[in-house]
Image: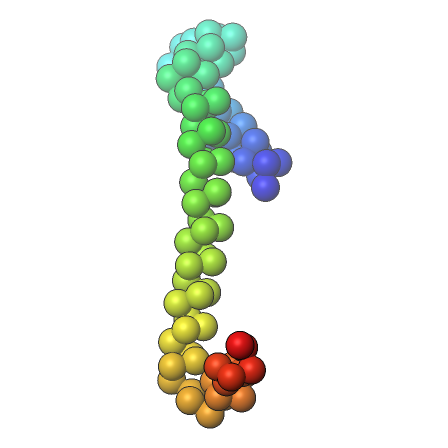
Amino acid sequence: METDLHDEMAFHLAARVEELMSHGYNETEARELSMKAMKIEQQMERCRDERAWQGWERLKADVIFGWRQLRKRKVTTAAAVPPRSVLR
């Protein structure tokens, strides 16, 4: 995933550099301005943080879905969950 993130940021940076070069900046100036304007490292850190939360959100959704399925299908739940006397 880190490689994908790096590739995507490189793509956007290259597009911004190309745009600035079309407005008359040389490549070095365009790259420096793009890096400064886009704040690449901050953007990458924000994406990493979002990715971490997505894992928890997926887990939460899976637990909710599982709970709903257990409540909907009483017979399957009775077969899957041991009676309380077995748990003591």
